[in-house]
Length: 458
Image (cartoon, rainbow, N blue to C red; front, side, top):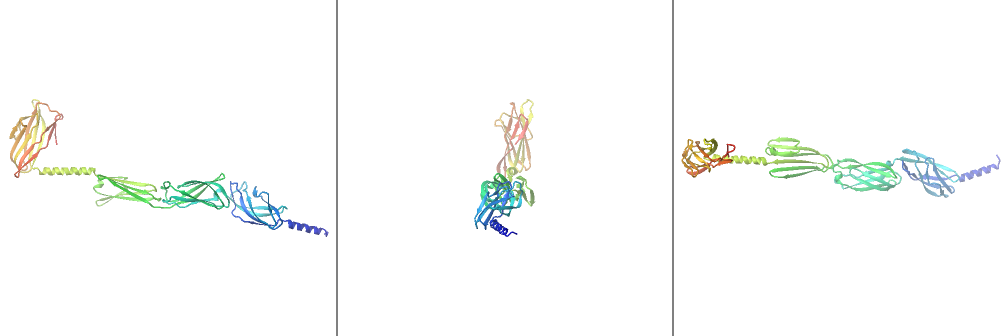
């Protein structure tokens, strides 16, 4: 080999070794992501130290159609600089982890390659939502939304919905940031909900890319069955029993009403009881109900004492009348009947039955005649003792009447003037002595209705 060529080769090697890219690259970030449909780059934080001469560095990759920074980054001798390398997602890509090469090229066209890994996700994978627990006494609830990835979101529009509330919010979220919101609750919105787990939905819009995220709300169990009673009325007594489920679990309710043999006959129930049990003289009515949260059961028990009071009054009246009758010494029963006279006059036959219940003496039966009538001369077996036509009075006298003895007194009255409508005859009076005391009794009052030609007695 020519001795002059050797120095030239050594010179080229020396120049090449001096001008070759001599940098140290360290990746300072982690968890970089790309989001499908969102024109947003994955950002890699690189720390680059230059161990060679001053240089201008250019970054590129075949994985992405677009990277940043554009142009070159200057780096002096021994200088360390932080560079944010932004890699935009390719046009056609699916979710998953991708490892790709990127290149750093010096101004002398020397370059080095490094490998990066990125996770491609959907927008819904970037968020998590959740809430605190709710119970029947809750007036508010805290909910949250968290950014699960290492990227920044500006102008996030979110609409939160659940059986407990609705909420719309606009906000920004930094990498891994969590935002909380306090929501006032209206108990009427969830008073009929059962305890358990409920879904909370968030409709999220980021730069016109929309997604839906679900979370869970726990509705804590609470038993609260409230019973109220109303009782009013004396003659018509009404009981209203109301059971309201103010908790959030299904409640089993049992209501028992006790009635005696008499009161049950005049009692009605709304609704009808589930079962009826008899124990001696008592009746037990039972209602069994399943009551949902927010619902109520109303039981009405009505006892109407009007009919038994009327019945009792009648019984008392009959008893009093029977007692009064049983205490009488003489019973007078009067009856009237229509008869046809030969001359066509209006005529009535009057019969008075005198019944002695006990021994009595000096009995005087007094009969008064109504006006406008005349007394016929014919009588029955018992002839009157005295007749006073002017005073319209007839009397029968008996020295005594034995206990159980009955006398029948008959007479006829007539009138040449026709009688229409209701024709009344006075009561028959009896004056007598019993055990040396003068006493009186009277008969029933008798009516005659001329149009119907029949007798009515009271």
